[in-house]
Length: 458
Image (cartoon, rainbow, N blue to C red):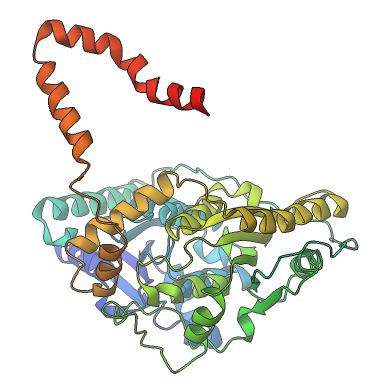
């Protein structure tokens, strides 16, 4: 059985994910893997039609396709996004149609769910027969019990192909037929009061997005800076080298403009509006590359306390996974969401109103230093980073460890003496059956009692 492996790791042959597949190949002698190092060679693939066609032809001749990829900033690396965009741009969906497929990733489980949701939806958009997704921890291959689960995954995949079984579909096709947005004349009366607002645009190819930016910026009486990613000299995407771990020093430092821009513009802005076009269930590969390259800050939040918003050309309302990714991104950055406005409204007047509201809330939230409490997305994500940086990743990401120590992220074991003493006292008391009954009857009222007293005094 020939399986084409589309390796999404910028590290190429040094990919941990790829070694899981090579382990499978060792155990199943009837399997032959044909590897293509997509992310590592993306510039050549994008510019060399012959090389791109070689990959397509190999897929045609294969029995199945496995998407093998690490996770970078809540989905897959920007280089992989670029490859997926090329497939649709070059109208090569027929190459993938009806091919059995699976996705395997390795990570520390920081939003591997959103990455797998994205990849499965893309597979279904290509008309593929999606069998399974497998998302081990980055070190699971070293564990005997997890090796067995990896082999179970492989056996199920091959059995499905041999039986020619049906596969389920979870995602409806996405449709987007926007109006040609014609922005109305803005009042220009909103005063940002010396606050720095930055609009970050991925590229200028979308007329609606350009008009949305114009409507937003012209709402202010003060200047709003607009920066376009395609104008920046960015040599490439994050290559996963982890050289930034000890001291935030990126391997690209001194070779392009990204780091100076991020430190000089992003970190100094009070509010940032990300403006981008949806490409295949995510934003463009340029925007993804921008997010990925910010990893020179490793797992340290650098947009803490800022107000973030989104102007989006595309079917945002149909893409729950994308909305979750964007929300999760700003929550683990410890930033606050102003709002998300897409070009899905039926009239230009409706879009004007929503963009105006975004502009007004930008200033209102800045004035109040508004910060919503994090949901599970931010709380759970940071606990994953906290645990792994404290433990096995501390040596690699020493800068994170220093930041986490200084900012109290290591909140375990809990050192709330009053709460610990109270719990110990009550647990001891409940060993008495009579006391247990009394305490159980009191719990509901006692839980809300402090809040009732606070409200009475307010």
